[in-house]
Image (cartoon, rainbow, N blue to C red; front, side, top):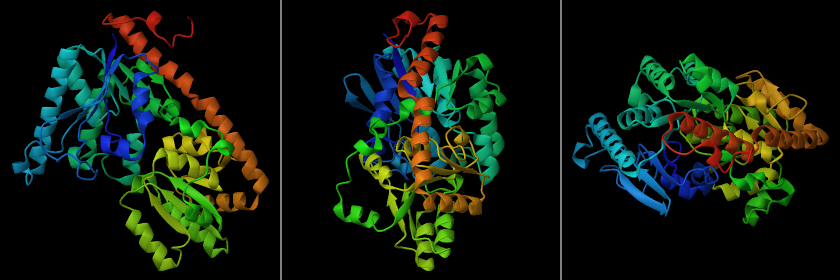
Length: 427
């Protein structure tokens, strides 16, 4: 039997349930390649995430199904140490690691997969070394680029300093048995950190996309909220999907709609997602008299998002990951910064407009052009959807990821073989 421990901090279990992110859990089985999966979140009860669990205590094992268990790490170990947060967090993480070590040994787990090269990667490396299991690390961002942009560490509350994070990344990526990256840009980051080239594989976002986003835009049902639909019909809407956070440059989207409104364009902005910039943007819109043009929708579930996107006119993408794929699958033309992996989807005069990073004026000009040209919007949107399928085909990406695990397990002799993979195209 092939069994997987999947350590990831992208979403808490409460967030997965609230946003209808069932595919986030489903894909971890890789179409049946793994017989059983244990998903583990190091700080599932973090204060910034809603949770029905108390923030402190031992890790909680919650059965999602007969073959899937979610290990919910706690933000603190003891309620009495709440005022000494750093010590309490460290003790909770120690308890989490110990629980995973016992789990791997008891359940004879085949391989450990970490969702980032920092906290999850460090935990995964410790557990892998203590149990003699294989470690596969996913590169979830180009951390050096983000640190240079924001001037702050990726996880300032845990690691505090840039040099600490960079040291951890090198330790984790140089020692991982396998590294998966969603683009060549991220693969280059892993190589820079010491990952061996032969251990790096590119596995794109495709198999992480909820299947509802793959449905043709014209075949998606309308939103159930008649009043909201009526409001969407009042004007054309640009949409941004992602965290309202400085590192995502979400506020730049507000600057774009502000510039266009100042030029007399009757266009609005839908912001899907939440974060620390929410109140900032809301206040700016009120001060500028644009509250009716800027709708802060917060986090919405995948069913609502899949229905909403085709109702929009175009997408703005200062810096997005999986959300860029979602708007492309929705057939939207995209105006994006030339950052990260975005040029792989967005090409000027083909799928939208790619503009220099952080050039708000150019982004506004690109949006203004598309707003005035319906034929280009239609053509670019169709091309964006076609490119998304060509680049991110979920079945292809699942096979690529299976091949990573199968190759490692073959070489290690721990369990299974490539011939046993249900995704082996040679069978």
